[in-house]
Length: 157
Image 1 (tube, helix red, strand yellow):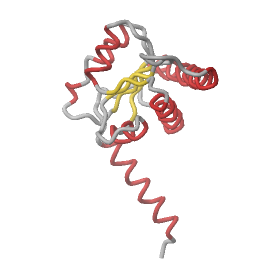
Image 2: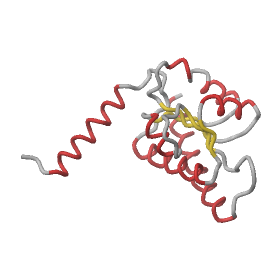
Image 3: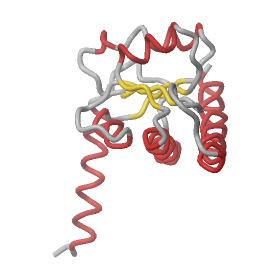
Image 4: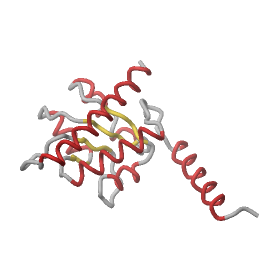
């Protein structure tokens, strides 16, 4: 009989397989496990500092206004037509973007209860200013994740 920790690990692997099976065919570049974890950490920090735009409507509006950031898109959106225009907008505006496997995990990282299709991580809040220490931490994580995303994207194309 398997121990509890082995059963938990098996259940976790099954959940990850299900997430990957639900991915849309256009979900490329897809973040690996390590990059996914770091991206969610960045999204969480941005949400705490109010530097996050959530949802397709808000993200598109922000990109069209010329705001810069990192766009994180969920790969298991159905119907996929909801987000097909977002990567094109990001490429036109020179905004790095990455897909993550689950909209639920993206919502948890963004501190919302509803599943989220995409978020735009910015380094500055739309209103007010960040403290020096928080701003430096966010900028450091942002730069690190942005360079990793561009590496993944460049290896694909």
